[in-house]
Image 1 (spheres, rainbow, N blue to C red):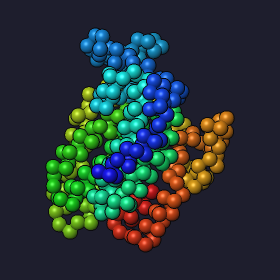
Image 2: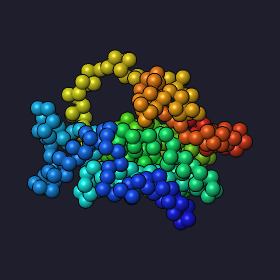
Image 3: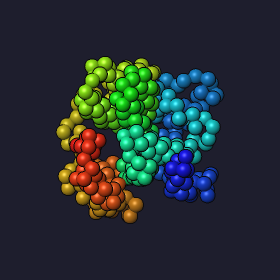
Length: 322
């Protein structure tokens, strides 16, 4: 309980300006301007007419509302938008996501045998690393919505392996659905690939019961897809009409790939400049917030020490994924 209170305190400390000025937006710029308009249209349609809007007539000559995965209309935590002013709800969703990432990472750490201190450090690094915090700047809440559930999925897969129980496949199915409903399929697919790799790696470490448990990720994906189908199927239809439906050239498709030179940013995050300092960013590709994996030099040192002196099945796997 003390650890969770510490995580709450650190989250509120980081976002203290929101509580000092509760009627102001977290950031009045970036993609929030686009997302808030679409969210407002969806909420107004439900509140005023009691119907789910399939079509948004206010964008260009019209725009599919249900098929646009940019706005996760059926993501459960977006219930916030029905009770708070749209622009303010984004800030409080960011707060919730950051806190939940910490809680789930801490619980996962405890599940794989870390002590309270190590699990707490892991949680804090996950909460405040560049991979999570930097998406606040452009207001891309759906990316954090998706990533929030990744450590919880790892936790459920680990529990399934340790207890050799199929019921965790059903529980994890709801988590997969939340990831798919979050609105950022790219992050969801990368997270699912990593989680499945973790499950297979752990399954191979078992001496008995492997065949029975291999169905768990299949169950979780099947349940996740079925629960998220209300958003996935219209999204697939809409994608067929996208400019990307007919293929992309390599330069566009690889625009946000991590160039080896940019690994410098894992140690010196502002080596390539920053969008906050007169837009001085001069990175090789992509943008500052999408390819900055900075999580603190101290955490890198701890990771190296773990690989060299605390080598076990977990450090080997996560070193490989890293």
